[in-house]
Image 1 (cartoon, rainbow, N blue to C red):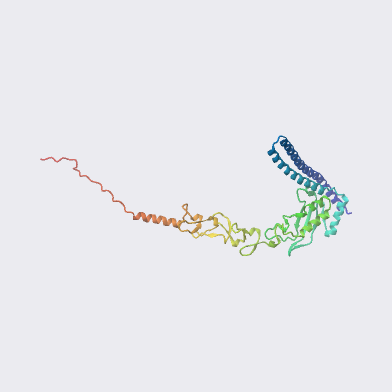
Image 2 (image 1 turned 90 degrees about the horizontal axis):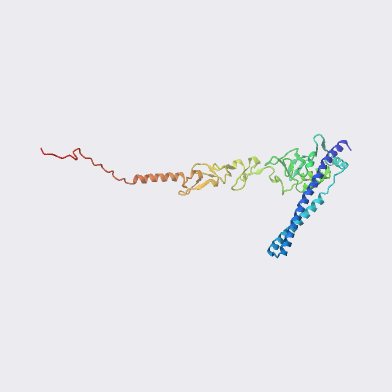
Length: 349
């Protein structure tokens, strides 16, 4: 066996050793949950005995219902604990087994890149085509040091070497790969079990099988919409940055078939927008109102606080002014002017 395989196998083995402690911690956590359910069942059982002895029948019935739930939870918890212990009983692999698995990579993929300085192992898949969509080849890169975080993180990346990303999201290079992270689906447990057992070649094969399979039930972007999102109005395919969602009809539109409300800034398609006949602004349906007098539909900016449009408001003012002009005015009172001799007495000569 070549020296590089032995050195890489030794690093992988040292990375796997802390996982044994993490596995035991998970067992401990599940045991604590199980013991908690047992304690609840014992506590309620004691309460039931006391209620029966004291002839507290209503209380006994209520506690009996709780005990029924306890038994159901206890059964579920017990089965979950059994499944975990049976599935996670994995021993540390031997150094030679890891080295042999590394050698198998060349037989399986034709070539494997083991970079001890960067602490990575990578292989390249053949060009992948799914339902007529050519996605190109991918590099599967395993980070040896990150295997120690297997329970909390994915210690590998999926890198598109000939990217043909989705038209609606450039970070999606495969229906099940986004930001170089794989949606593992049913492969979650097999992937981790292969790494835990040091079956490095099997790990890469499982990843390749997932990349070569399309699951229409859980893609980041479906293959039907791979080239982009179609505008509901004109049918033109647009990317995510150029796609506008109308909140009123719930469809996607391109920039030419959409606009925005000049009052609330909501994005609307041309069909759901409304041009105010008074000011000409394009608005959404929520920013329109009906004039209570002429019954025209206008934007809310063109409706006064009294619920009428400005045109009807002006008519009101004109009518009011005309009525005031037609109303007769009362004559003004003429003031009485007294002569200078008022109050004087005529005297005979």
